[in-house]
Image (cartoon, rainbow, N blue to C red):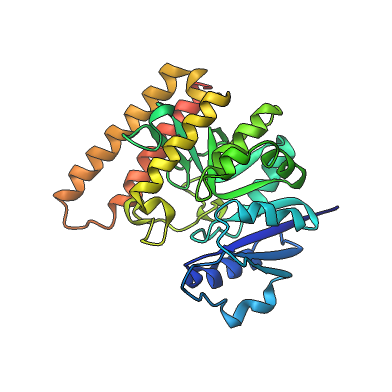
Length: 304
């Protein structure tokens, strides 16, 4: 196995993001030595790979049938390098994202991602304001531990064996559970899940460097846009909890619940201010700046 970096991209229903993703990956300050593409089948629809970037991929796998979100992780086992990035099809990294993750991996071997989920009522996830997001949705100036990560994953290739070790029941969910199951299996091996720094002062370090309204992030093609899928996420997390997944709130219940309340309060205050403002565009950045201050203050004084 080589010591370089492999980047695995996913194509499902959003080919319009793929060109931007490839461009962003080629502009990284630390370059990958291979870029792979996993294309899942869309029933009754033909999704074309943009011809302008076909030659940028070292390997393209087109699934003969719909496999679901687990397929790209299984495909990643064909990568030639020790370090792996897997991207959702809606995630455009800043050009220092690979550098950011590699530097953090040198400090501590862990699973890293751009969108961390921190649950304060795990049995209710992802319903009823039961969690907060750290990273792209909630900027952090220092590395933060979370329950699991999504949108982009950075890890060591050998850890994929853990993900597929006795997890057939979770793989059966097909359209979800790969993210939480990965962190659960790594937890069993003493490996943490972390979100590297996403400082407001340098968006190029982010796993997704585009600031936008979080309410409009997921378009109609996103799996989480479907309420039935959210119910599946809830079933999946409860199955993992029964199997022994230990959420961070069980280690610091008061602190994480307090953090959640402060972020929710901030969001509501900013939303009210936005209603009465003529300049509505500026409030997304203001909201993220305040959330960032709350998260950073919490992790500076409460080590969680």
